[in-house]
Amino acid sequence: MTPAELSRTVLHAVCRAVDDAALPGPVPERVVVERPRPGGLGDYATNVALRLAGPAGRPPREVAEILRVRIPLAPAAATGGITGVDITGPGFLNFTLARDSRAELVRAVLLAGTRHGHGDALAGTAAAFAPAAETRAAVWTETVVRLLRTQGAEAAVVPGAPEVLRVVPAPAGDGIFTALGPDAARWALLRPAAHDRPAAGAGLLVQRESNPLFRVRYAYARTRALARNAARLGIVPAYSGPSGEPDPLSGDEVSVLLTALGDHPAVLEAAARLRAPDRLARHLEHTAEAFLRLQRAGSPLPLGDEKPSAAHSSRLALAEAAGAVLAGGLSLLGIDAPEHL
Image (cartoon, rainbow, N blue to C red; front, side):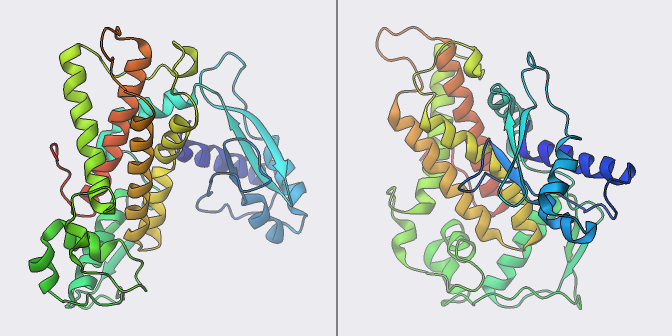
């Protein structure tokens, strides 16, 4: 179960509670799920009960219990879905997913490819932005339009439109593209938050992992190199998860990367809704670092006389899933994802 699917499941529970007259309407447009905060349990959590408590005139924990009993649990033998719902703190709902949900997540990413995270969360929303003359504002606006469209919104730049996206201007104006080239210039303009001044130094051209842009593009290039080498060995990406052959890399490195892949749809939605491409850029950094940590922990491909196994197929599937997220994210930022670097 992906975060987006979990969000829809909780929203359906709210709808049922309203239909049963257990809670008053209206039903919220969306339910945000995120990783549990300190004191939380399971894989994901939501504060929807706290949001509904005021209009309902009830304590948040009581609202959480009303929702908890309306959230379907997966059968014990199921390979995906919710296996447990707990209430913590003032009324947070915490969800534990079936262990094989990680395999389901990787398969979903591989199926969607670079469109992983695209959806209809903002379907029915229309956004029109005024054209921007300043360099950074223009790049920011066109990128926000692309992000909104990934979530089903109708978005465009329209002369005379009321919405104006305001950012701290680029220090070098149009010259930043001449000095850095299109990819590094766009990263320099989009990576800092709108209220932060973008840096236009030559550090963005350094071909080392200390350069965040290089690190993201290098991680993607490594995923492609692994795919090419695996093809020569006849290894097909197939994430078997915990039910398959034991994988010596099934510890922290895998969990961190899976978390990044699972969080990607929510990051895209937040970046679109908040008009904040910098959120996507930071998430790509995190995903790239998670993948490179996994690769440093052990070779995803057989070494020496080692025979290809299900573990190698799983690692390759993870690498290809990470590559899809990195390539899709870079494309939305208008930055090239190189096959070789």
